[in-house]
Image (cartoon, rainbow, N blue to C red; front, side):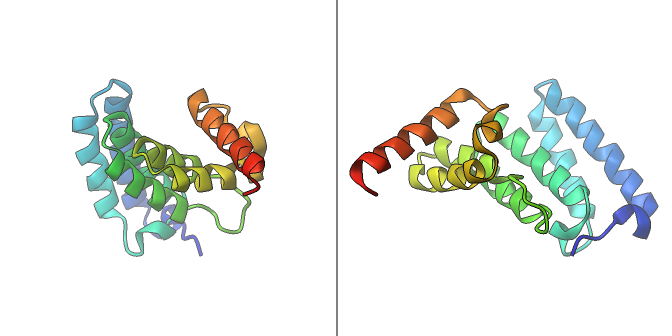
Length: 153
């Protein structure tokens, strides 16, 4: 069940907005070494359970994923992608977090796990799920799918 931080603690929500926006500015400028601690501060301010806060859980976790991924720290990126996935709206059909976990797994050479995540995403949204991703991820998924069909798997 998602909780609305804006309703429960408007001051904390405003503080988180400020922090994440500051982190995003740094990240967009390529300064992830400064953005990550700001995102971590924001994550630390989220009340427990951290993955249940409307907007903020997935926004902060997704921002951390992006910064770690862009910094080629794929182990950390995967952990934050999993949190993004866990924070998604479970009552909605969404691919939120799936491609991110898949991308981190792909970069970590965890190809079977990457394929599994990409398949879930593709099954929900087809090619459109990959429309804003590096084309190599869709190519990997389609090639692996074709290989499995040939081998009867």
